[in-house]
Length: 249
Image: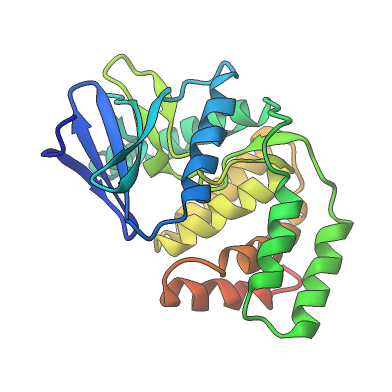
C-alpha cells in the first residue's frame, strides 16, 4: 500500500488514498481498543442495506494501526452545499432523508447509546450535582433501538458521480434513541458556526419524522455533556454551555 496521497488529516489520524483503497492510519498513541471497536462497528453496519464503505483489512503500517476500506469516489455533501449555496434547502432535505433511512435500521450488537452516554457523563469535568442531574435525566429518556451514527454531519456523506449517497466514519455508532442522534447533529451544525442551518435542520427533521421538537431538545444537554469529554478546549467550553440549558422556548 502506498501512503503518498493524503485525503484527510485529523488530530489523531491521517487518511490516504491508494487507488481503490482508503487507508486510515492512526497515531502510535491511539487506543488499539478504540481502533478495533471502530472496525467492528463498521463491519456490523455493513450487514444492513445501507451504502457504506466496506472494511477490507485492519493492519499495522510502520508500527501504527490502520483500517483499510473501500475508497468511495465523490464529493462530500458538505462540499456540495458550500459550492452551491442557493440549493442549501434541497441538499438539507436529502441529508435528513439519509439520516431517517439510517434510523430505520437496527444493529443489536452495537454498544447501547445510553450506556455510552452514562459513561461519558461520569468521565466529564462537571461537578457531582450536575452529573447526578444529567444521569437522572438520561435514565428517564426512552432507550430506543435504532442505528445511531453519533457524528452525522454533511462531511460524513459522500455523493458519487452516479448520485449515490454513502455514509462514512462509523467510529461512534451505537444503538439507541434517534432523537439523541439528531441532537448531536444539531450541535455539530452549531460547532461549525452554522446556527441558521442548525435550526433549519432541526425543524425539517422534526417535520419529516413527525417528532416533537421539544423531545429532541430534551436530549441536547445530555448529548452536550457526553460529547464534552473529548475534543478541543474551545469545543468543550461551547458544549458545557449547552449542559446548563434546561428548558427551551
